[in-house]
Length: 348
Image 1: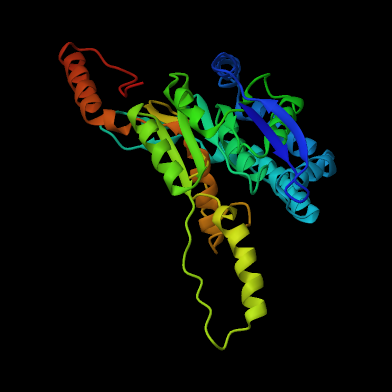
Image 2 (image 1 turned 90 degrees about the horizontal axis):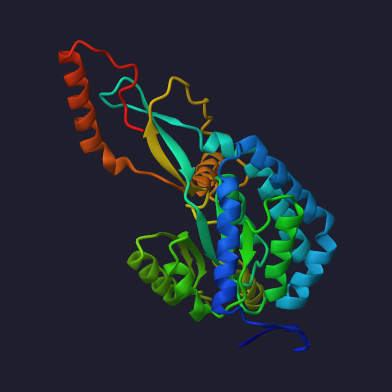
């Protein structure tokens, strides 16, 4: 199957690509998995270096990438440039704040000291739409990569050049080779990717029908899924309305609103918290710190949303605690009866 990049204004074919074979998809996943194994061991400060470099790359190549966006999906060049600047700011934001968002959290247990630690999930499969071709990817990738994960990108089939440009930008920014890989496949070919044991989570921005299918496949494989699904609310125009203004608003809303709002669960889902003992105190968090955006209307809401985006891509295992506490209590009591003491009594 061929995947074509077509200028929607002229219908001229800009480029043609062969769809990736099953072998090529597996090779991409293998490369991303190898990169993830080393990336996960880096500190937040080390991860922030290429993330800030990615922001710089997006700004340096803004004209080049904006032209590509406009040619492939048709938005005005001014909007393409604004989209790239927003992506760069997102990279800077998570480079600065990811460590605070994903800091250890103390937990009250009957152990001497316990905390929740957020750890990387692994590879995240991202199925992304065409209308914000850079932003939809970067808003997921920035928190996911800062959380220590890798990514496989399956972009909309009408923006293949943009998908490859994103992979190029990430590579040139200094991330490990292959940490974010683009696969050029049709939507129906994502099923083997979701089933691949190296893919640990899936995120989709798209239609409700596609989301339902992705959720089914992810659920069958017991994998975390983050879905932002489209929909249409009634647009009611009354008799005394300004028809020209209503028409302009309707057209603008139809193209912008469905995917311009970030999911309230984007950053913290791509690390996995596990409880461990520690004597280190978690750094203080300000409920009002954040990006300064007003996407929900309050600074606290923006902060909560950004932090949640980072925590999406982590793993958590609080359900272990009922039996874990009982096990450790029994072990502690046994040591006490034997006349010994333990300096650490919370599960790892």
